[in-house]
Length: 626
Image 1 (cartoon, rainbow, N blue to C red):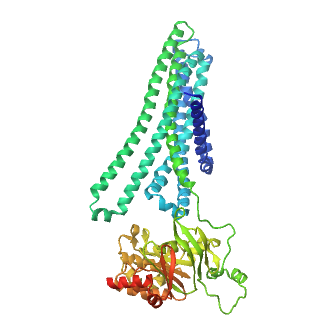
Image 2: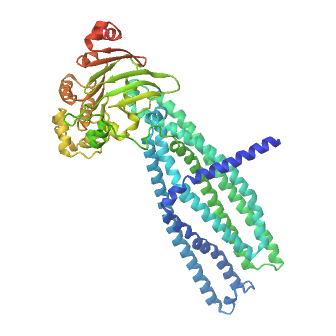
Image 3: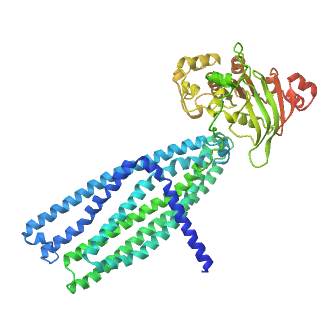
């Protein structure tokens, strides 16, 4: 190996150790939250180690006392044999009892500590994930996120509780045992230490290989969970297009790769255990050989040799446990890396430190701020709210591939505007930018004259309501799916249902507003889910209402009811309507026609038909299709 390669290898190992230490330090703040449990568990290490280490010494004294050897302690020599044995037996029972009781109690504390650390990490991870921009979810499979929030986090608790504390416990026990062994017979102790050196190197090397295999295994598990989640969510398509066998083969391939990676981790783990067993047997044989030679030379008593052999066995017990705990830590480091990748993901969209409130904050009681921002306030006629302005907005999901190009328009308060255009024109992107799910690449978006980046996200999204083409429902009762955790009373929920003409439908459910809905509302129809989405918007009394093909999933009768409620809901509110059926937007104030992210036409329905542009072409094509 060249000097360059040696230096490179040394540098890589140093970086790995540095990274391992850095990864471990990420858990320290979580451990500090449970500082009392951590301190108590560490304090228990001393009596446990001493109670464990004293047992071979007492057994050796029993043998020395029976054989009347010179290594017998002074306070036992002048006593009758039975009395001396009773004293040693009592001390041995006390040592065993202390060890068993304290070990059990410490195990409980350590597991509790691990659960608290796991819960805290899981909570922070969930909060961080739900704060990330939608852009992150566009590129991250759901199954991978689920794996990292669940199984990866479970491993993290073991790193500090079972792993780190266990390793400290084992190291402390080994130091106590070695100290007693040196006090009994230093030559035999040096022989064991010489045998431990190659074992330590083997353990470190195998653990590095274990970690690499474990990381690959966790990645394969993420892919496995992603495939499972994808097939469960898309089960209708899977069955309708008879993809069961094909998807099962894809799953089998991924499952096979995952199994192969886990087989490697099992191999490395088993290899360490087997190696330690062989080294332990060789060490005992070496102690017996050298101890027998010292015994024949009368340099060692039989009782001392017996105690030393027991110590030699016990020295390898924490070493075996140490190897197992080290495996846990290596698996934990893998999990920390994977979870850390998520926690290190920057939150792109944040509220600014000193946000300012605008005219539209009147809805939430910020009257003083409004009057301060108005040039000439008129107290007799409150200002009209709901103006939307796109000021030369550009936007790209990635690099410079712009899907929105220099959009510059103003929607007046209370105006109804429809967005139309072919697929990929940028209609949905406009809504995402308006709701601040994404940030514009260039330009500004203003509501009532205020840049939306200056407004707290909670206030911005409370000021507007978005009704999507497919209403999403959470597992829970009907009333909680309307209130979504906000503190609305049952009377307010019922009033919103009346305003949107769905009260009768809710009352016909088995338990009315307390009817439990399954995940994604699979126990009610698509139209009924959409009705609940309308009630969800109505109860918040938004100033701006966004409808993304909101009535597409309704039948003719239900759509008539919703349209009547929608007309009431749109009074004195600014509305943006995305529609593919052009017949539903004839009565809007203006229509924006988009093509490849650019606004190419705008006007009323009749104006655009007279101009004979893209809108007229789309309208005529739809008329031909009816």
